[in-house]
Length: 243
Ligand code: PXP
Image (cartoon, rainbow, N blue to C red):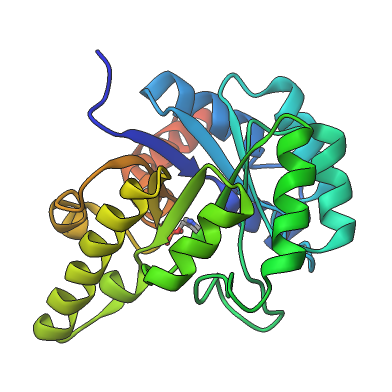
């Protein structure tokens, strides 16, 4: 059955776990295959300039071996753009990137960086990738997104998801909904991502015209607990096999 909204699973943290020990497991490709089996629509990976989790080799392997379309998150940095041009992911999501941040902290300044973003959007789209721009739901920003020629915006839901004050959360949610209406009227596809988990999903789903939800941290975190019991049982069984 077709899902009401598409789900893109961000598997960066699978690579984070692997990089923490410098092993070759857990392998993001295995994770992508499990996501496909579970019904996900796409796989998101962020090739950061500091290569803290996803590595270049993951990008090459996933864009050839993954059963689902790849959405490559990346900064508008020439070195990374070259990789995207080479591997031609189904989708590229341009995000701002700061070296010290734990995760992407805010939306792109599309107005301030219009010329360079427009150029990258055109290069990637002419090369066959759909480009989305990760932005806050601000009218001027959304207008600039449409002007770059990008077909998709990913609305930054992190500010809403992280808000602890209910009034502020409500105000952020309203901005997301108004922004989605505006982006839709501009002819843009609307995706959403950042900080979404089972507990706040109900609110996120009130945002109109949503196409794809890109969710990572909460799914991988949940997977640890969903799978821990099996992993311990499996190890105990293996130990006992010597009997
Ligand atoms: N969308 C974008 C553009 C992101 O940068 C991230 C985090 O890498 C996500 C979605 C997923 O956010 P989370 O891991 O909080 O679900």
